[in-house]
Length: 150
Image (cartoon, rainbow, N blue to C red; front, side, top):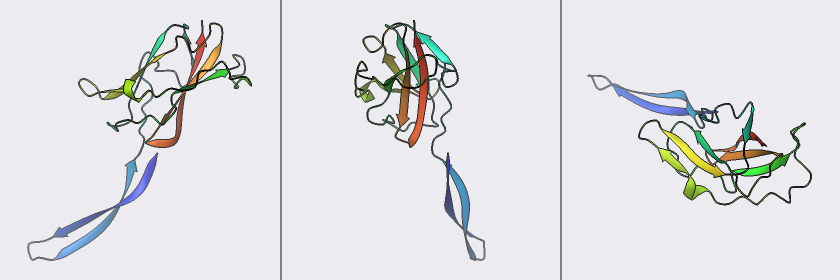
């Protein structure tokens, strides 16, 4: 998603003549590059996981934005495994917890965020769920991972 903006530029020649320009530019607000392995295809395929697994969610958004997770995210939603529509009864789903202290940003080898999301105690075998991430830098942008629990 890009937002148009203007950049003011001032130039002067040796004679002292000054020229001002306003140049239109596009500012990249959310360069979500997708999830990295092992969840690289998570936005287009169903990820098979166990009920005790920890999902290593890694992603890039074009820089270090600090605590980019929106409040109450990521969160699970119980889904119908055939239609991928939300189930009417979501009472078995635990409310989202603050995950900001678990969020890591690695600049050492490749700049990416990582959040190890524990499924243990949150999901049941034989069921399907979505895990939804919302980022503060893109308040309306949600990234959804579809999970089928073995």
